[in-house]
Amino acid sequence: MFEEISLIPAFKDNYIWLLRRGRAAFVVDPGDAAPVEARLAADGLQLAGILITHHHADHQGGVAALVEAHACPVHAPAEESITGRSHPLRGGERLDVLGVPVEVLAVPGHTLGHLAYLAPGALFCGDTLFGAGCGRLFEGTPAQMQDSLARIAALPETTQIYCAHEYTQMNLPFAAAVEPGNPAIAARARRVAALRQAGQATVPLTLAEEKATNPFLRWTQAAVIGAALAHGAADDSPAAVFGALRAWRNTF
Ligand code: ZN
Ligand code: FE
Image (cartoon, rainbow, N blue to C red; front, side):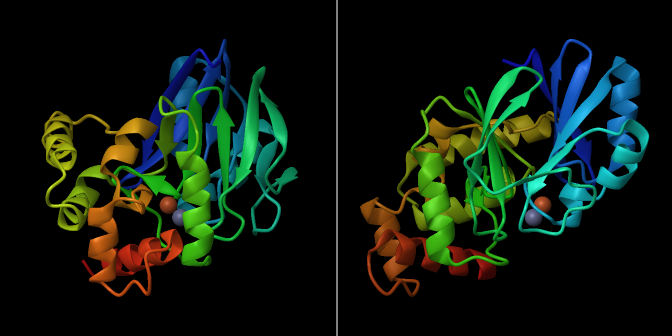
């Protein structure tokens, strides 16, 4: 496994993940090159490659400058417009990232070509799953996103989820509105508030905690189904429940 997985903050609330083994590093979703260069210089690291989850500028905006400076490979969705992409991916591939086996998962929904990268025990999921929330459906359908999230939910519960934004605290009031009677959500809100107060990240997430508190993974729970039906879900199918919650969240 990697010797270190650490975050590089970017913009207002993005996280660029840095994977290190020895003096070599990969970065995931470098939306900005400057903070990556600063970190490489500070830690004396060589940039060995880049993983991209999807085409939005806050995830790939730094690629051109990093490739120019480091001539490193760029693994990225084949079906999206990605600057400097050297290795197009569609999901199902297996990569060697600094000697660590990484599986590529297709997780359409936020965008149609969206990928997630699964290292042993660690998932880099871009804007698919967030703390207590999920990405907006800019390109995909509710059914596509629900299927993507279901495949993430089926990973081992100890899986650490490295998403690309610090949104957990912002998302928890909606989770509480969906399930006012879920004590795990209230307990998480207190823990998250303390972390943020101390200036700390709430990411990585653990899959077990998301499954207990994230309404977008809880489409089989009676309270969640009831809330979705009260907010326009046509039936109690996972895709309909998920779709109604996602639409409600957009106006919450
Ligand atoms: Zn995005
Ligand atoms: Fe983003």
